[in-house]
Image (cartoon, rainbow, N blue to C red):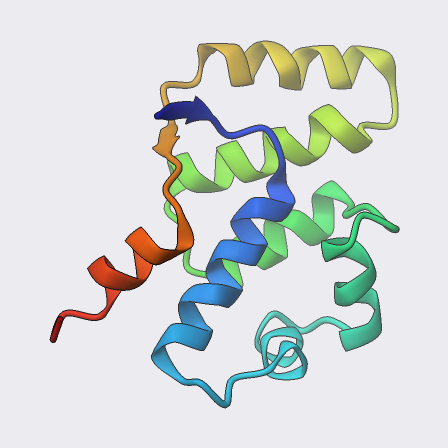
Length: 119
């Protein structure tokens, strides 16, 4: 099923899960260190208690090695949710509607089979 990505937290969670798949000892604390965040703050962001500023989002995008298209998507998702003004939120939402970046959602067991090549 193809869906349009609607929450920037999913991008962060997916990146974290990908890293855990590569190293089972990888922790949220290590992920926070890698993106230069306080671990408690990152936990609050992932759980929806706090938002992420556009400036911090741009730094995170660089540290995660996102390409220009991924960075635009990530920043527009944040701006659409946490923009300072109604105009900036509206502009970001319009950019997201124009975006052609879609993803396919799959169940965890399907992902596990695909991600573990030796199966």
